[in-house]
Amino acid sequence: MACNHMEGQYSIPLAINADFEGGYDFIKTTLGDSISGKTVFSILGNAIGNSDIGEFKLISQLCNLATGEAYLFLSVATGVFDNSILGEKKALLRSNYIEYLLAGGLAMRTAESFSTLKSHLEKRISLALGKSEVDGATSLKFNDRQINQCIFSSKRYDFKKLRSWLEKNFPLELLDSENTLTPTSGLGIGSYIFRINN
Image 1 (cartoon, helix red, strand yellow):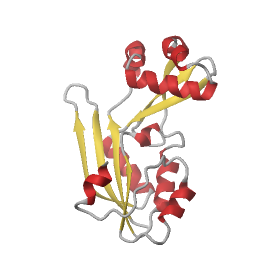
Image 2 (tube, helix red, strand yellow):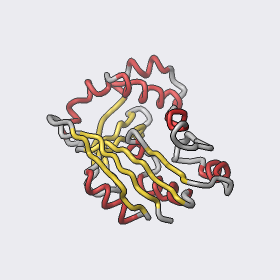
Image 3 (tube, helix red, strand yellow):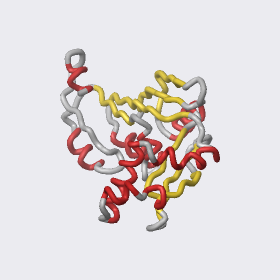
């Protein structure tokens, strides 16, 4: 949809919607040498903070795909997970998005019924604060007690520290950024546009 909208203003010869946690050979082969002009990679919706492979590997692999003039659009959740979130388990698990995400993920892993899992999430899931590779980031882990495994993790980032970490570890040059905070909660959405200098 975004590509269709932009096509009237920019030439978009090819768009790939991919999970950047894998499939790099497919992406590299598809992009090939035939693509000229700019390449734009977008990791939106805090996908970097939900990545199973970790932030470093995700961004490293993406930067390795970049050839020629390449850009990275990145949006993340900003703020902090602290101990107070652990007391909000019931409300958190009743969020439609979280219910479907966790029950669906468990159903794929365990072959159990989605509806049964959805109705028993509160008993099955425990919450714990986790870690991140990025200084200043905090993590919330959703653990399944029955299989004794983390099934989902989400991170929140310190806007300035994430930028520093990205620029220190990768060939990224910041072109623009903005952190939109919710006034009362201290949570927000941080957005960055980087040029990838390979």
